[in-house]
Image (tube, rainbow, N blue to C red; front, side):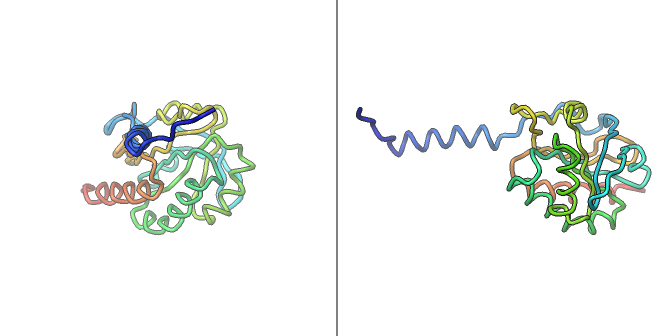
Length: 185
């Protein structure tokens, strides 16, 4: 059986099409100004299990919720470490960082220590209720999309970022938190 190799033009066209699918962010259902859906779930911080409640976190200041596909995968570990490194900066603006995924709580207990370096909480959403409410479901079952929200203390969505670059989520949400703090009277 003889196979024709792809030409450079065919390879470039296929690569461009694939990259367009990966890098073109879909529109999030939640928009800036929308009321943030309630979040209640079992979380882990520094390996300890606790009940996370968005309303209680908002009483302290803005909340950065970032959805990630799967704990201990390369991109998610990079993103968790970057958020861990940035958590002290977010704290200067009274902002809480929390990650949410489909992973079970036992996995997230380890992830909260090993990847998040005990700096911020991660919440398990095995039934994808929160993931669906925030339009963070991916096309692959059991995996969330990479999307981040900054929620103002009044419970409104202040910023939305969706994209495949895990480091950009940290940068973009930090910029949004700073703008939110600057807009505060």
